[in-house]
Length: 579
Image (cartoon, rainbow, N blue to C red; front, side, top):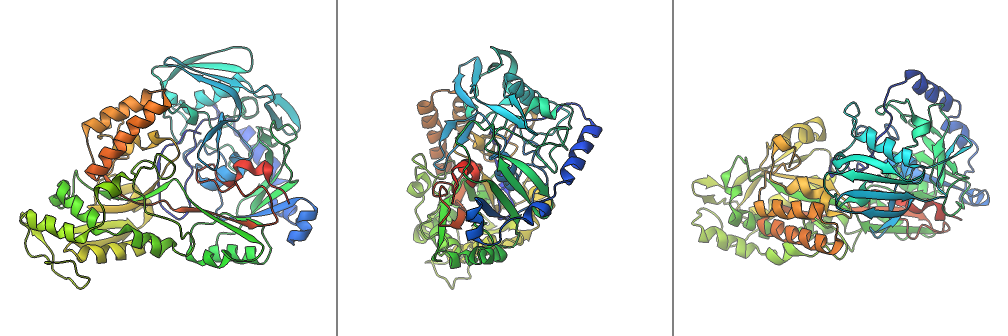
């Protein structure tokens, strides 16, 4: 599953999956797929779903509350690349070379062996991997991998990302179950390539940008899968049903049916859990979820995710040039007590959460606290910095009642703080940061903007901000952050996500080294040096990793390891679920 790091606008993450799909457009085939699936709407299946947990247990049926609808199930397409599409129609249905577990570790899945060298990537497909296509059994072969690659780099398609795939120059194969891709230079994050492999024979002739808009199916409209389940039906605005795939190569699913019922309101989700209407939910973090923590018969799990909420400080084109000076950014960093923010936002629903202190890794042994080591909270030291640099007009000591603002080199310490409108968490953070910074003589002018198209479509890409708060969605491998920190070079399509215009040539050199290093130990050490420099430079101020929350009936077994902080989501081990 190759990821591109994406900005997160709302409360639920957009998934970062990649691959490709069909070449030529066949409108007739697409039409057949739509009409065929319409014959089995979700409502028809839902009418037969038992309404109580006990009755569902008796029939091995599970109902999962689905917080957001999808725009389609082809998460390889930029417009359909969404979290709920991944955890309903991809992870349980369409598999890839590796699967990422709840600890962020990679395990071979569709492949039995992978070998990466400086010149090639060889993938051996497991011999028992088959496609289920409307009852037909077809082997997963090298042709499916080649087809996927070809569609990813097809200029007529709009994939979510081509990163890594554009380095492939050709392929050879050995029999039907082994493919070797040749590349211009090694791509160290190869485990995130081919995280979703398409059924070439089934989708041949379908348009990559429109296929799977209402199904995960072949050109004939019949369900297709090489995962533990297949999508038996889907109706926009209602939900979908998964049924076991008889040709799945892994452990036979214990459940006979999983129904994802669309419930878009968090309070309604909570009541559905309490009332026994659903057996599990994967909600966005909201304070109201606290009422489920100690409810009898319910298991509540909250773990840090790979979502990096952070502050970008514009050092390239700020309205106020003080932000270009490291000492001034240091004063900002030391004036913000991030633990107050984390406690205010997640104290009840994720009480063990702590602020992030690494600009690349959120969780795990690599998340070394560089930022905290360099810039521990100290508003007194921040004021000392102002005095040392000849600033005037500010407070003599930190005070919650302060109204005086520093002036340094003729520049008033007043800045635009820009973030998304309609997001309660960011409204809270804006209020907390404004209070904390004013206590040391820094004033924020808060500006809330619509996420799309204004904030993410205009403000950030045009560098039209001083200080901005938003989130990036990452994963276990550090390379997804490369273009967030590399010196921008539009001519070479480098650093397009570096909205803050941070630039450090040493960082660029280390990233270039890490991108091609196939040795995991030395590669991690290289990126750790990057993280250390980024922290010292205050390239960003890391805030927190939004908790990934999974709530389920305690009578449902196999979900104890399902809460996956990666974008694979809780369905990564759906075959393990049972009553």
